[in-house]
Length: 218
Image (tube, rainbow, N blue to C red; front, side, top):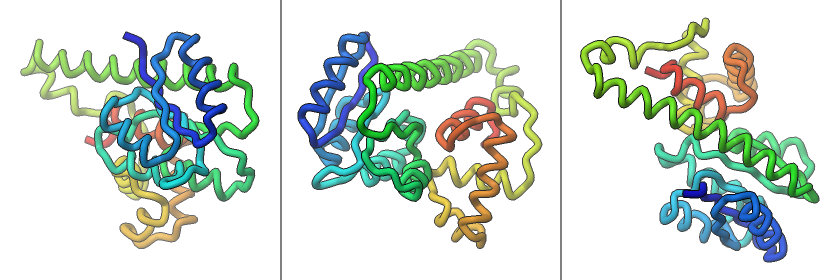
């Protein structure tokens, strides 16, 4: 079955053009005209990826992603933000909430297609690897119990970095992590930057996926 992509945008022309392009690329597309409707579709259809505008009525893209990331089963769901906003602070907020990629409007559909394909391939690869590890437990439970929850790579993390990584996996923002650990958001950001560098990942969602796949959070 084709992978399902949710497109949320209050502009019907944008929804139609993106939907037609992605369907022509072999995906199944569902669409919503605001964040509230999109959130309901996430729960009903369980899409494999979300493409969402930021400025929408009833519930904007930021709140949509915030609500999605509160659900443990959706913390690693790939999210692409579409926006006409150029303020770096807006982008930082989006990454803090857990988006994977920003695309500035206007954008090329071919670029969106490449981003979607890359994120889905990576997501499916991680899911496949996780499933194979779970199956390994069933096949050889005695030996798997010893190894499956142990880290599969060696990453030299400090105790503080480990604490930050765990809170990131819980979906907390920099300010929330700072409150928990009694650190400034700037200090938290420095730890996050160090984690990205040490794991060779490019954003927070990818970092958490890496940590889960390699059992750094166990």
